[in-house]
Image (cartoon, rainbow, N blue to C red):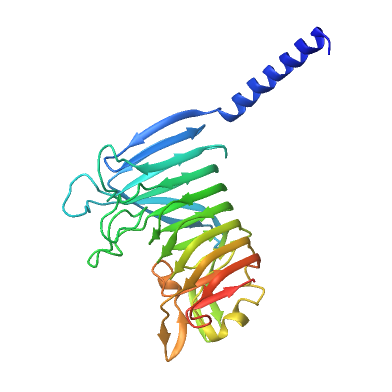
Length: 333
C-alpha cells in the first residue's frame, strides 16, 4: 500500500470515528437528585423533578369517545415514610425526547443508606432509547420494593402508584430490583427486564377508544379502554405475581371460564404481540364471585390475577404456571 493510500485511509477512519462520536454522544447531560435518588439523563429533551406530587394519567376523549391523547395530571401529596420529611413522592419528567435519550435513576448512596421514596417517570411527547432503574444492594428497608421505595405499608399501601409512563416507544426498560404496585406503559417496548412483579400492571399499545356497555360473557362492563397494536420484543423476569400484562389489549372484567371465548371475539381480541416471554413462574391469588373464578378490571392496578393478553407470544418460556385458568390466564401462546 502506498503512502498516499495510507494517508487517505487514515483520514477516512478519523472522519468515520468523528462522525460516530457525534452520533453516539449527541445531546446534553442533565443531572438531578433527591436525598434518596440520583438522576442522569442524556438526550435532547428536558428533565425536571416535580416534588411532592403523585402521577395520575387520564385518557383524553373526543365527542365520539376516541382517545386523542393523555392528560398528565398530578396530585399534590405530603405523605412521607416513617415521619421523615425529605422523602415525599416526586414525578420525574422527561419531555420532548427524540428517541435517542438514555435515562438512569439510581439510589443516592452518598446521601442515604436506603431508598425510601416513591417516584414516577413520565416521558411526555417522548420516546427513549433506554430507561434504567438501579437500586444498590441492601438499600431498602425490610420488605421494600424498588421504584416505590418503601416497605409494604398496611395503612397506606394503595395510596400511591409509581409509574414508568411513556407516550412514545422505549427501546429498553430495565430494573435490577422488583416492581411493586408499579404501572409500566409505552406504545412499544423493545426489552423489558425486572426481577419480580407484585400488584403491578404492564401495558403496551396506542390508546384507541373508550368503550361503554361492553359485554364479556355473563358480565357487562361500563368503561373499557381499548388499545391498538403494541409490542414487547422481549420480557424477562423471575416471578410474576398478581400482575396483568397487556399487549394491544382491552382489559375488562370477565369470568375465567369464559375468557377464551371473550378474547377470541373481534372486538376484544388482543392486537399486540410479545416476542419472548421468559419467566421462572407466573401465579396469582385469585378471586371468586358467585363461586366462580373472576377477574375484576376495577382492581387491575391491585389485581388478584395474573393475565397475559397478546395476539401472539412467539417464544413462551415459563417453568411454572400456578392456578392456570383460575387466577392465571394466558392468551396468545
